[in-house]
Image (cartoon, rainbow, N blue to C red; front, side, top):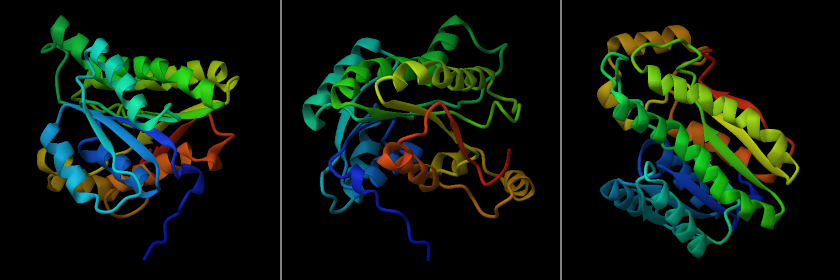
Length: 254
């Protein structure tokens, strides 16, 4: 059986996760909590958050759930402030929340465009801005922005999602030097096709299984915990000289 790493520097460290109630986000919350971090997470899925908190068992610090619609910037800023009150100045930000709902360009109106960008890109920018003063006060920090291999593969079916995720990589590169002066690291964590409950329910069929077997270098499904363990490294002191990078976790697909 695999033996996974423990990161002493994460014990007691304050971690904020967006979109943490289910899927990959829930794995982030669980893995950080088991490392002894002080975790707060934002989402609109109250039932999912309650279910997650009920399954964590004994952890050094119980995570704090804050209901927040990330498309509302006032609500986002208020939630970051509330998280700060509960876990202290934010040392690690994981910009995870996203929506990869399938769509066509013909089917998107102006409101749909704004919502897609708000969920998949804008919240990452403004959450990052909101925690920079905390990290400067702390003398450093780590920001993990969730990218995607979907746009790299030129996948169809979600052009606005692909555009937003490509922009996330540009944002990371555009901020790395400025933040680095303050010992703040910013990296893109880039998932391949992670088979969460949602992905399995909505998209994984026999053709998808065959595609995974054909395209991945490593056999088996990519899971949410595979991404979360990479995020632990990027948040820990072990990655102290890593910034402005794309960390792809996809089983060797791209």
